[in-house]
Image (tube, rainbow, N blue to C red):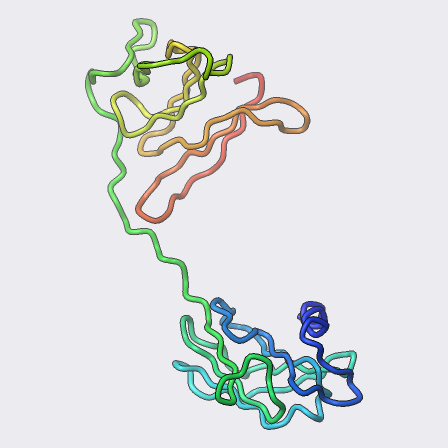
Amino acid sequence: MVVAAITAVVAVGCGSSSGAASKVAVFPMAGTPDANTHTQISFRGASPAQLTGIKVSGSKSGKHSGVLKPHSDGNGASFIPNKHFSSGETVSVKADPSLVGEHKGRVRFTIASPAPIGVPGHVQGDPAGNPGGAQHFKSRPDLQPPRIDILSKKKSQVAAGDLFLAPKGGPGQDGTEITDGNGHLIWYKRVPHLTSPLDFRVQQYQGKPVLTWWQGGVHHGQGQGHGIIVDSAY
């Protein structure tokens, strides 16, 4: 906190500890939209003795008492509230010295609100039976990867190499698959029931090429799963 504050002091031109500048910098800064509920409030550009008349209040949590702890360089202090702020509320800060960003005598910032929680949803599983649009193999009747049709291809616009796909939610079973440029299956890995694959590609790991993808349950607003890395033994 102190290091960040010192950097900002240079930008706003606050004075040294020998005397308060015309305005004292405050952190979180005015207009901050996502301060932590446990945040302290730091003042830079005045000695602790000059930081009088500090009043802190939250639009939900009310007035906050606390302790003012001096910074080690003597050119500021941090107000440590005795209680936490509430999510989504507006915090106003007032002090006797003029504050950078104040409006009508107060600096205001907002406490962050939790990210929306994913809405529980129904994860669609693989179709049962013998679905159309899937590939079938006598040697592996348990595997039914989706059939890939390449409808149009301009050779001048397509690089050489194979296609890495992660089809889901369509005919056949969800999984990762590698096809040639015509859509003919080269390799296929079915993902567990009620999970979906995403971002199937080649990457480098410890200097060697690997295949990577993410698999898990995807709901409205969020997903929960894990990354997969397979080496040359895949």
